[in-house]
Length: 320
Length: 315
Image (cartoon, rainbow over all chains, first blue to last red; front, top):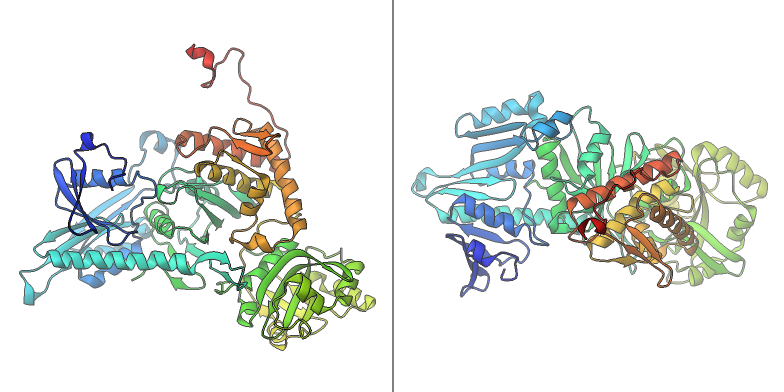
C-alpha cells in the first residue's frame, strides 16, 4: 500500500500499520479507511467516510497496475438473496450496439435505462421486466438485501451491493454486514478460482493431458449485428478494454486474439470465437479469471442483460 | 463451428477436441475417455523405412496402442503411395523409440495408421486403398458425425465408438495455423502479439518468439508440433513482418539485420489510448487490404504539411 502511486500531499494520504499485520489503517483526505489484506488477492476496504471520498480512493487504487475491482454479474447479484430478503434493486443499461452517429456526438456515455426501487414493488418490477421486451436492457447493477428477524429486531442491516463490489450497509448490526461481505467475497473468489482451475487451457508435457475448456457466453438478444458486436468488444475502448483485430472466417464467424488493456490483466492475451449469438472464451493457463467476470458483467450492462455464461459442457459460473 | 468441407487443420482440431480432459458441449472427448493422450502433431520421426510424419498421434499407454492419423482435407486427392508404404512397413517399436509414443513396452506396442478425410471423399479413398492393398481404417468426417469405414480400428472400444457413428455438433479451433493457412488469417494474431510484447515492456522480439506464442491457444502445445509446420509458419510470419514494416505499420516496426531483431516503436506500456487505437486502425486496414488482394497506397499528404513528429516546428 505504501508503494502505491498516490500523492500524499494532494490527498492527505498516509498508511499506518496496525497490530494486526493483515489490517492497514489509511488516512485519505478528511477520512479514514481500514483495508483488510488477509486475503492477498482480494482486499476489503472498510470505511464510514463519505462516498465521494471512498469512491475516489477506490478509483485511484484501480489505476494502479495489477489492481482490479470485483465484477458481479447479474446471476451472482440475484443469488445474494439467499443471505436475507430482497429489499431493493438498481438497474442501468448503456446501449452500445445500436448507437447512431449523433449518439456519439451528443449523448456520450448516457444511460439508456436507469432505475432504482426500494422496498415497494421490487418483486413485481423484476417479474414485469423478466417477461418484457425490455428484459434485454434490465441490467441489474445493484441489489439491496435486508437481514432482519422478528426475534432479534434490534439487530438488522440493509446492504446495497453493486456490480462493482461496493457494499453499503445501513442498520444496526456490523456483524451482519460483515457476514454478508465475507460471503460475497468467498463466493466470488470461488467463481474466479473455478474459472482459473477448471477452464484455462494447458498441455502438460509430462502427463500429455490437455486441461481446460472454453467458457461460452450465450447472447439471447435478437438481431445482433456481428460486426458491431465485434467492434464494440474489441476496439480497446471502455468498458471492455479488449484490443483485437478480427480474423473473419465467414460473414457470421470470426476469431479474435485480444490483448487485455485492463490494468488487472494488462497485456495478457485471451482468445475468442464469435458468432452473433455466442462468444466462446479460450483462456490460456495463468489468465486472470477476473477478466471473465468483467466481460460478462459489462455484457450485461451494455449489450444483453439476459446473456448466460457456462464453463465447459454445462458448468454454471457466477451462480451461488 | 461447422463447414461443408473441412480442411486439414479443421480435421486436426476435431481430433484435438476429442483429446481434451474436459468434454466440450459440442463434441465428446472419446479419446480421453478411452485412455488416449495427444502425443504429437505433424512431427517427423526418423525410422529405418524413412522419415514418417503423421498429422496427429495419440497413445494409450495401458493398452499399448497408438493411433497415427494421416489427414487429408477437402477432396483428399493427394494421398501419396510412398508415404502410405512407410506407414505399412514401419515397426511400432521403432515409432515408440524414436517417436516418443507413450508406452511401457515398445515390443508390445502397436500403432495403427488411420486415414482421416471428409466423408464425401470416403468412397474414392477406400477404392484407392483397396486397389493399392492398404489395410488402413478410414475415419470419415461429416458436419454432424464421424464414422469408421473400410477396416476396423485395433482398439475395440474406439472402433465401437466410431462404428455407431459418433454424433457431434461443433468443435473449437485450438490449433490455429498450419502450412496452408493464408497470410490474412495469421496477420490479426501477429499484430496483436506485437502489441502484447510492447505492453509487457519489450521493445524488440525475434521471429522464433512469435511462433511459439502464435501457434496455439494452449500453452506448451508448440513443443509437440513438428519442425516442418513451424518452418512454414515461420516463413509466413517473416513475410508478414516484412510487409507490415513497409506498409501500414511502417512507423511501428523496424528490422535490425545486425542483431536479427524486430524493433517496436511508439508502442509501450504507457502509450496513450489514441496510439493504441491508431495502431489497431492501421492493423485492420492491412488485414482488409491483403484479404482483398489490393496494393498499398501511402496516405496522400500535402507538400509542406507538418506532422506531430516533425521537429522543425519546435525549433
